[in-house]
Picture (tube, rainbow, N blue to C red):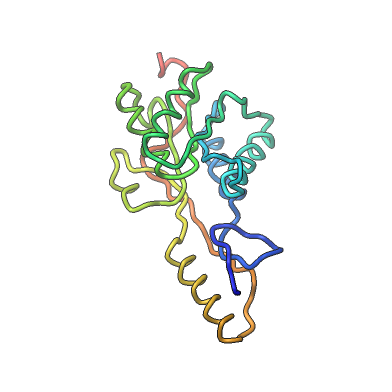
Length: 199
């Protein structure tokens, strides 16, 4: 029976997706280039989820390349829901030092983090930059709009269906199909605040 995995690249199985580790690196590098050195992560639950784990691995690699680490207390794992993003940001803010930027494992977690920041009077991005992954439709409508990685979900679905149809029809097709992602910079991220800016 033909099958195809989506949202991930694996050399050993039919798949349509993208490099989740590269996405994590790209977001971290973008924030590091803005001067952030205290970066927190609200990730999806990584146990049993290779996509979430690869994104965290990419973030860790980018930090390590600049001589930084990701302390355990700055990595919060939560299910992909808005309310969990709120819980995640509360957990990050309970540790010291507070992050100046937060990378969220997807846009739903980022939406929650932004709601929690607003509830606490934290200015985004003046006090805290927040970024997500997916570029869900609502991301551009937030105040401020969310910086995120655009993932072509419709293309992934279409190309996965085409793969299965071709297999059922007996045609020879590529087993690994990579789709492109892109960083969409919006108003939720900015330069790292100077020490006096946060006092």
